[in-house]
Structure formats: C-alpha cells, structure tokens
Length: 450
Ligand SMILES: NC(=O)c1ccc[n+]([C@@H]2O[C@H](COP(=O)([O-])OP(=O)(O)OC[C@H]3O[C@@H](n4cnc5c(N)ncnc54)[C@H](O)[C@@H]3O)[C@@H](O)[C@H]2O)c1
Image 1 (cartoon, rainbow, N blue to C red):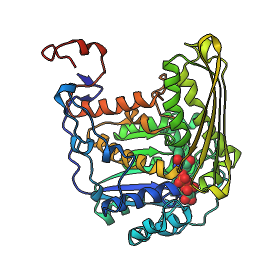
Image 2: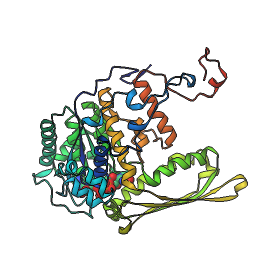
Image 3: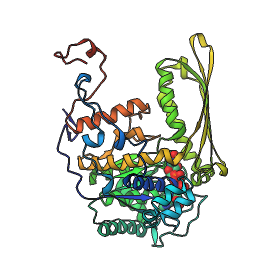
Image 4: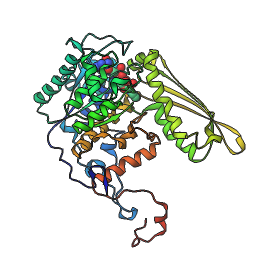
C-alpha cells in the first residue's frame, strides 16, 4: 500500500543532532510555559503530563500479542536533550522575565530553570499594530518594507542555525491572534503572494511573513493561533515546492477540547441539541488581545465551526438543524491564565424530552497548550524526515480548526483524530493499521482475529 508519495514503512532519516525550535511569540505565556516545562523535565524536576510523545503508548498488532510500546520508543523522534530554542517577540524581556510576567508557573518551578530561561532572549519581531490592536511593543524590526522584513527573518533563521550548530529546525507561531482576514487574490498563488510582498500589500500580516520565511528556508511550520497565516493556497503551493510539512490552526485546549469530547458522544447516541452556550473568563495577555472585536472574530470563527462539522445537521435535521450556538470570551484580569469556561448544553432525548448538561472547566490555558507544542514540533520534524509535505491532516488532533485539503471537511472528533494519528505512525513504521473492525472478535487467532 502506498499513500501518495509515502511508502508504508519507508526509511525515515534518523533524528541525528540537535533540533532547533523557532517560536514567533517566544515571550508569551504558552511559549515560556512550554520551554520551562521541557527544561524541568530534562532536569528530572517534573513530568511531561499531557504529552503523547513523552507518555503515550501505541498498540501494535492484535490484542493477544500484547505489544504496546511507548510512542517515543516506536518512532524515531528527536530527544528532549536535543532541543534548542530561539524566537521572536515584540517585547525585549528575556524568557525568565517573560515567564514571571505570564504568572503561569509557580516561582519554585521557574527558579529551578532561571539560568536556562534567562539565557533565551527574543530576536526583534516583525510587528504591525493593525493586526494586533491591543499590544504595542518596541522590540521590532526597522527594515524597510515587507521584503526587507522577510529577508531579516530568514537571516535570523540562518544565524540561529549556525550559532547553535543545528541542521534541522521547526517554526511555530505562538504569537497573538491577529485580526480576522479573508483570503484574497494575492493569497491564491505563491507568485501573487511574492509580488504582493514586494508591493507592501496591506493584507499580509506579520504571521504570513514568518511562515514565508520558514518555508523559504525549508522549515516545517505550525500555526498555534486561528490566524489565516498558512491556510491559503499560496502557502500550500510553496510547502509542496520546498517539500515542507505545514499544520494548524489554533491549539485545541480548554473549552473546545471538551466540546470535541462531548459532542461526538451525544451524536453517537442520537441525542438532539437545542442550544450550546459557551462563555469564558480569561485574564492573561491573550485575553487582552481577544478583547479586541476583530481579533475575537478570528477566534470566534474557529470555535464556532467545531459543532457544525461534528453534528452534521444536513444528515440529522431532526436532531441538529436549529440548535443555537454562542461563544464568548470575557477579559477578566484577576483570573490571569487560569481560565474558567462554562458550558450550558440543552439537549433532548426520546420523544423530544429536554435535559441539561452544565460544564464548569476551571482550566489553565498554557498548561493545556504546552504539551501540544512539544508533540507538534517533534511530530513535524518526524514528518519532514519521513518525506511528508503539505498539510499534515494526521495532526488534526491538536487543533480547533484543523487544516484540510480544499473540498474536504475537517475531522473534529477527538477519538477519530487520535486514531488517525496513531494509524499514521503505524503506517510510517510498516505496522498494520488498527481499524477496530468489530468482527475480528469472532475469528480465531489463526484466522487473524482479535
Ligand atoms: N493557551 C491556549 O490554551 C491557547 C489555545 C489556542 C490558541 N492559543 C493561541 O496561542 C497564542 C499564544 O497564546 P498566549 O496565551 O501565549 O498569548 P500571549 O499574549 O501570552 O503570547 C503571545 C506573544 O506573542 C507576541 N507577539 C504578538 N505579535 C507578535 C509578532 N508579530 N511577532 C512576534 N511576537 C509577537 C506577544 O508579544 C506575546 O508575547 C495566541 O494566539 C492564542 O490565541 C492559545
């Protein structure tokens, strides 16, 4: 069996040497929590809870074979000791100061890795306030025009690689959510996009310049925010030309994680939905950025689309045709990074009788997001070494708005996403996919059952 250019069990280039992780928005809550966490784990001071690559196992073969290795032992991933970090932010603070500001991790945790975090200082960012209205940092590039800024990011990448003796790098956008943008003419082909860069087109936000710089330098690119960024034909075209994997958008944490666990369950039991009201209070810098209506619109679109795809009202009009879905985020500083998400879910059962479910998720945004970054950078590096390019649909598991090929709808169901991810790993390593085909239960071991 062959999937596109990818052969089952084809040789994967070994993960030799260091892996550079380049982060746009390196001074943010999520980024600093991620880097501090990796270092705490490396020093044996904490456990990488929530990370599939570090703690997850994968069942291979039939159940009676009892083969369930750790994912990290099954696929050739880069080791934590080989990761080196760098990136850009609009604030000059080093990553220790930035982590203190973010108020996510306890002081004893942060002080345990103070030397490490203090040694990482952001490079000057490409920033344009038209796209993130509620922030204004001075640590920004002054190069003339978009082309000049793009070339500076590429020079930063080359310099980072040379300075750290790094062959392979992955770039990830953990920067703020940019204002809502619809793809236009200039986003349709790489040629048009490059011309638009030269013409300083006002519909090219900074995140697109980072993505262009990454792909033009041959790096995989991950988008952790709901921004358009790489979700345009021009970037897909470029990713195929340079043979780089891309993935996004918007880390699936908190409330949406709950939605993609609960909604598939309700649907599989054919319980109807009358309404789903979701609201959040959040007091970190992300909350401040999302307090601007245009940035919130980008987030809202990402959060709202989930139920529509999951419930498929066109297939189940009796159950899901007219449900009311509302999502709000309220900036509430006292809560900091410890977001609270409430869901009021009005469902109906047999003969239409109403019932209610209430969810109050007192979560921690960056604690939920950090392990996703770790998994994503390791898997994207693996994908590139395995010769995979373009959209990595198997990583939909990590996103609220998974990118998909034009004409397909995204898969949102967390358990299906997890199955897709693990089957991709099995395929890459030459193992049989596990389909949970129900009838093998009735077959003997000799017939290939169980
Ligand atoms: N934490 C979660 O659960 C979660 C879930 C999904 C998505 N996200 C997204 O991840 C991103 C990061 O979240 P966060 O909580 O760390 O936010 P944050 O505000 O703490 O961090 C964002 C950082 O990006 C920097 N930045 C903004 N524009 C930049 C630019 N052009 N270049 C370089 N740096 C830039 C900011 O200065 C800030 O330090 C946000 O877009 C957020 O919406 C977070």
